[in-house]
Length: 83
Image (cartoon, rainbow, N blue to C red; front, side):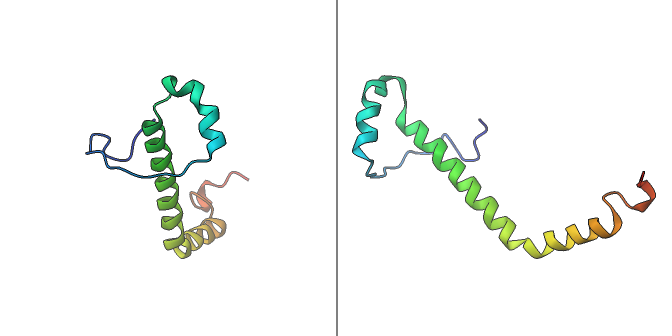
C-alpha cells in the first residue's frame, strides 16, 4: 500500500476506547498483528477519503460544468464520434 503520510515521522500517543469484545477476540492474535501499524493505515485511508470528499465538494460546480460540456460535445469532441 502506498502511504500518503510521512511514515518515518515521530510517533505520537493517542488514547482509544475499544469495544471489549473486539479486544477479547483479538487476544489470541496479538503476536500476529501490529495494532499501531494497522491503526495508522486505517487512519491514513480515513483521512484520504475525507480529503477526497472535501475536494469533490469544493469542486462540485466545476465537475458538474465539465460533465455538461462532455454531454454536449462528447468526450473528445464531435469530430471523433463513431456513431
